Structures are given as C-alpha cells and as structure tokens.
Image (cartoon, rainbow, N blue to C red; front, side, top):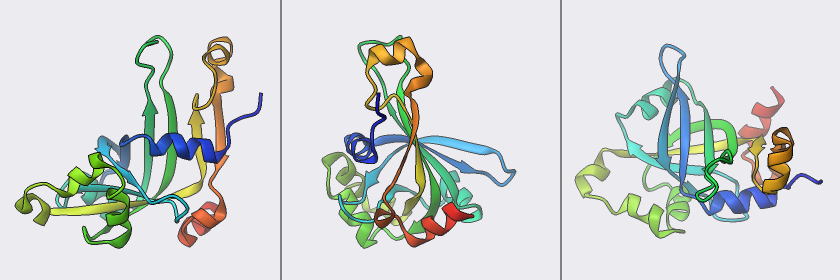
Amino acid sequence: MAKPQFDLVEQKVREKTFAVLSTVDSKNRPHSTGIIFAVSPPGEELAFYVVTQSKSAKTRNIKRNPNVSLVVTFPHHYLRFIPDSTVMFRGTAEIVSLQNEGAQAAFGQKKMTQMNLEVDSEVLKASVVIRIRPSKTVYCYGVGIGLNQMRKDPTSARYKVEIPSERLAKASLVMELV
C-alpha cells in the first residue's frame, strides 16, 4: 500500500490546534510542553506559530538553542486501544513580535487561534510569538493509514514525507543539508 504524501499530512495537521513542543534546556535536557499552534496560510512558506510569555521556559530555551520538535497528535477517541497517530516536525524556532505579519495571518485563520491574541492587554504586553520553521523531512505514524493495516502490522504505519522545497524557508533547506 502506498504511503500518504505531504499534502494529506498537511491537511490533517491544519485541522488541529494542539501539539507538543520540545525544546532543549540549559543543561541540554529535553523540555516538552503542550501548546496551541497556528499554521501559516496554505501555499505560503510553511511555519508554525505559538504565543507564549516572554519569560517562559520555551522562550528561554529557544534563545539558547533554536532546535525544536513539534509533535501533533491524532487520538482515536472511540478506539482507545489503537495508538494515537502522530506527525513530528523537526526544525528551528525563533522569537518574533506579536505584530509579525506571518503570525497575524496564521492566527487569523481559526477562532481557536484568534483567541490567543484576544487576551487581557497586560498579558499580551508580556507575550511573544515563537515561529517554527520545519526542516524538509516529516516523521509520521498512522496518519492516512487504515486501522486494519495498523492492527496487522503496526510498523507499516511509520513513514516519512518531505515538504516541497518551495514551501520551506531557505534556512531550513540549508539545515537539512548539514
């Protein structure tokens, strides 16, 4: 059976707003936290955006080490014995302003992500945006794979897709080559 392509993976990720962001702390240990994310508009350079406090662990970690991973989960709400499907992006993150044009466009696409920018003005004053630019290879498990196939051979649900080069930041392409 043919593995899904990036278009399907992107479509499924765009339906979500919750993910787990992993950063690296000052002692080189992983730090993971659940986040609400927004995705750049379709057809544009692919990027993910997260609103957080300027003094959060995520922000401090990214300032020291921009390497991150973002895992989007797809739980099976009715068939809880089936492992969640996942999509993992590796990439680099940077801190940008709340007024960043790309962030504003991304957050404006869904009510859930718009609410991130509609909080108390005092909270917003202490907020920043994390922009995550993924590298070319995306690691997937189960997305677009039938449950019968997953049940018969769980390893067959694991695959990689590549983000089309025109959708990547030039820095992401360089990082992938290193």
